[in-house]
Amino acid sequence: MKAPVSVKRGMEMLAGHSGLLHIGALLDSMQIKDRLNALDNVHCVDPIFPHADVLFSMIGLISVGKPDYEAIEIFRPKQDFFTRALKISGCPSSVTLRQRIDLIGQACDDILKERSAFLLRLKAPAITPILTSAGQFVALDIDVSPFDNSKTQKEGVSRTYKGYDGYAPIFAYLGVEGYLVNLELREGSQHCQKNTPEFINATLAYTRQVTDEPILMRLDSGNDSKDNFPDDKWENVHFIIKRNLRKESPLRWAELAKDKGRKRICREGKTVWIGKTTVGLKGEILPFPIVFEVTERHIKKGQQPAFPEIEVDTCWCSLEQLDAEEVISLYHDHGAGEQFHSEIKCDMGLVHCIC
Image 1 (cartoon, helix red, strand yellow):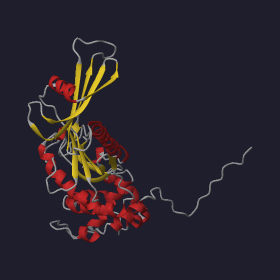
Image 2 (cartoon, rainbow, N blue to C red):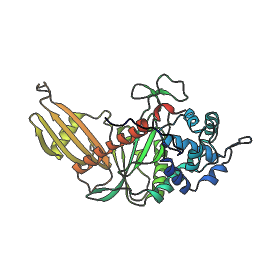
Image 3 (cartoon, helix red, strand yellow):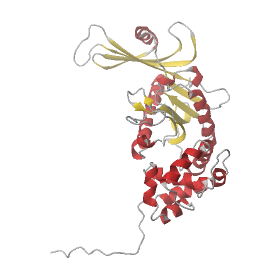
Image 4 (tube, rainbow, N blue to C red):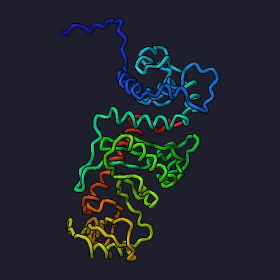
């Protein structure tokens, strides 16, 4: 028989969140404490903790996947490691944390985003570009992802386009790695296009603080608007934006595709035409080329419908050098943003803890 397990009590201090050491080092390299502590128009009577300590404590909680205010209490009895790792003077209570974040949160928003861009340029191990026939570009994926905050009474919670109550924040991810360069919390009922041109301009400003490489911005059909085309002041910024067909006729698109597109038979009963046009359905000259993919199905689930089923996907593309297949493939890669949404919603647990 094996000897019984022997359990001894030692004097070592064990830390379950040793990664906070890296978080503290990154926060320190942002050189942000003095600016946070000197925030204008923030009136706090006789504060025990500086603004930077409060914000760093909240960042520490988010980093370990505990973004609710009450989670700070588990670090207070033995706060030595938490405070030393984040290089703060003390660990505030949950009440203090809630009150101070409400007080200073909006005032420090621009500072945090600016210094986050500075940190990315300084410390990011790689910002991997995507390779195309027109050269290499750093992807900038912008998308709205609703949060489910059903059965809560939080300010701004309202019906989202997903059919549940919550918020509808917009996110901007940079590079293949998906670095978050900008975000904006929005009410759930807010249309995804509202304030988006301003958001795009702010995002491009932060992006240019991170990298000087050419940018390829990708948006879905909810943001199909000429207002989202980057201004002339942004050099080396290109875009692929999926179009909203609105009242355009699928039959007309099928006619255009058969005339100008390349035919590909995928299987029996399914034919696809892919191509590019600079002229609209009404004969108008377009500001940018439209790439189209028109699918015609004569057989669906083994059945032959009375009329063929037509599916149309189109998108704007400012890179005229790219052929249609490459544009479609690049837009499909935009779906990787769902993975980044999942990391924020699930891995970091931020969905139900927005206050």
